[in-house]
Length: 103
Image (cartoon, rainbow, N blue to C red; front, side):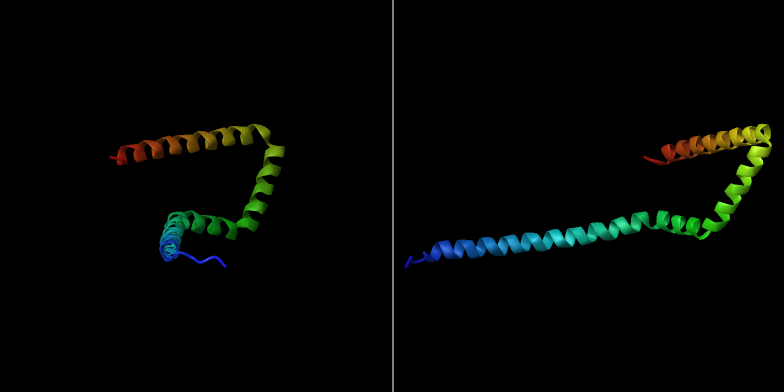
């Protein structure tokens, strides 16, 4: 039978305690990061839920727009270009404002 040296046993016991403490700290950090992530994505999640509540209306509306586009292609094309331009302008303004906000 092999006898264990007490100092080796104590070192392993100490190392095990250190590893357990490290694991506990990692778990706490992971929980904090998870809470932070949920706080960051909460506005996007609420927006997505609001959009999904209007899902049937969006489906019907897009069908009607498609029918209108098939029957009147020139005005549909003109309005779609205007909408795309307006969205581009809004994005440019938003990016400019956010760029000016940062220190």
